[in-house]
Image (cartoon, rainbow over all chains, first blue to last red; front, side, top):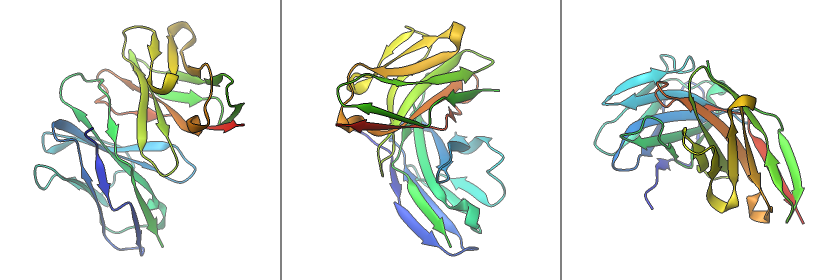
Length: 115
Length: 114
């Protein structure tokens, strides 16, 4: 069964360092998303991406964040200069083209710990 | 604006007894509603979804949910809990025209005891 894969599963970094979280969406999907879940809090929308550009972003997604689809398979989230409060589980998701209310398929998450 | 409220942060049931996880939503437009489950150290898995078809939706692992517009509710039920059902459950809403941005509830931790 096709699935969304994320790497790394866990990353520990020092405050101020750059981090890149990688995602391989399901191959025929065209819509891509990043969500995050700070420990003990709800899952929050960060950004959606379609047709090689950001289609929507939340207030959380400030200038420290960027997304990219560098090739036909990967979808990355970069945090330029990490802060303590960026520590969270980051989930990538993808959706196939077609119905606008289709199911999002989520990866298993990348846990980021900023020290 | 859309929002979703999960009324219970923790629910504990005995194995073999019914499960009820409550969810109420608020949406200015016709909503799509989902229940996702997250097992420890795992990703988010879709249990079921409502997208304006039948109001009683059946999902995987024996779960079902009923969309009640008059009560703005989408409660998740299962007739008989199994130990493997222990997990965190998220009620999620999106609406047509919302770009598929999902709004998550705060989650309900389900504990199943022998």
